[in-house]
Image (cartoon, rainbow, N blue to C red):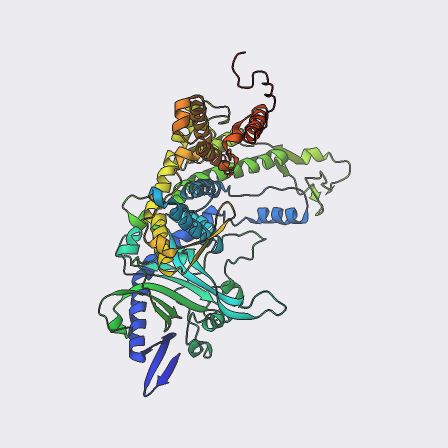
Length: 634
């Protein structure tokens, strides 16, 4: 909102910052130029994304006959198959995502950290903090969408941001009266998967290098008036009355996602904008468009400071006309907070086909085979019938499935003379075999049937298990490493810097249920790297567990190895691979006396009594020696 300060019109863009109208207009022009620079690429990419999504989700307009069959199915009038699109690509991608989440994650958590041996406790605590943020801000859900987009479009991104959640919190202690105050309830690393339909970026650089070489990126979204007013009340944006009062809604860059269902159970819309708009193609009267930039700017040029050195700013542009928030991003990492992946990396950038685009033709062929098969079965059931309509008059109330066909024919006339039937049904006996062959071919493109090469790893030899892992998963591991290198590792390091810079205190709940306070300075002084799962070395954990079990048996049988290695810690590690977090150190003997057998303990107790009595000058008969107590021959 423009406010008058003295004789100059100014715009409030942060809690304690205003800029002049001229600086504001120059900044808006600069931002709009960047959007126009990127919009052409976004539009061409979004057209491709629409085509992919409709094919993956089986968008199919049925003909009149199948529409009637669908209506009959809905009413319960029999079971009548119609044309369909087999969801082979979607299922194949979902299997691959399941695998990648296991590999990109770390054991049972999403994040793991490694550090020098003497700093292992700090690294573990750091990973605990990140996993707490992951739980609070639903990182797993965002990672799932990110991976799905990477397979669908060969283009996906994650945005890590330090987020503060505000609300009412209790300020007094436990008592009769509860007092609340408004403030920060929780803060931490928020992770957001980009919407590729509404993502703008510096197209002059390679997308996977956007974080360190790009000038800007921006995301577009549309909000209701209620949401906009709440954002202003929370201090996230400023000056909204200028365009809300005048209904100055001008949605120019946000793109509504395509309709992916053509069946009668769909509302034919994937956006609340389309549902509220009278005209589905026009959404300019029902929402307010916010475009959030992360962009390098010169502070002095736009009245944001006196420095001429470029800095990263987060700028929010409303309806393409007014800046409603500007924040300098003084993050220690000095990067645009984005990680982009293009897992099929061949140097052709945005023109490279995605895994989905390569799989979809096979899905189309398999679907055509299935639809031909069901039509052939229908034709074989009813055949092709010709009749003389001058002789036979069909009643409107006929039902061939129920064998109810009322006809009117002349008296004393053999109806069979006016009817001829043909059965020229195509042979579809091999249809299911052909579909199975297509499914196997899809496995060559994106292998996901990890365990099908052997009947069961529990019954397989170690050689078979190793062959299964190596043969079926090495390409998936390659994909995981590419995605991690392009995007996920960058995102994790940005999150790490956010914690080091913004986290005020850390309370960590250990696996044993102990709540400890961690010193943030310890984290800053420790070189911490992130680890992903060991991937396919540990994917077939059954084989690894068997090997460790053999090593453990060897250690127990060797007195020298037993003295040099901590058997309890080996057992702890082995059971942790089985998913058991039990701390076996609690079962250690507390003293040497605990190692004795009950007979030896009785003997030791009697000897102790004798020694005490001897010191007191009392003699007692020597205790009888239990037979073979020491385990030596008699």
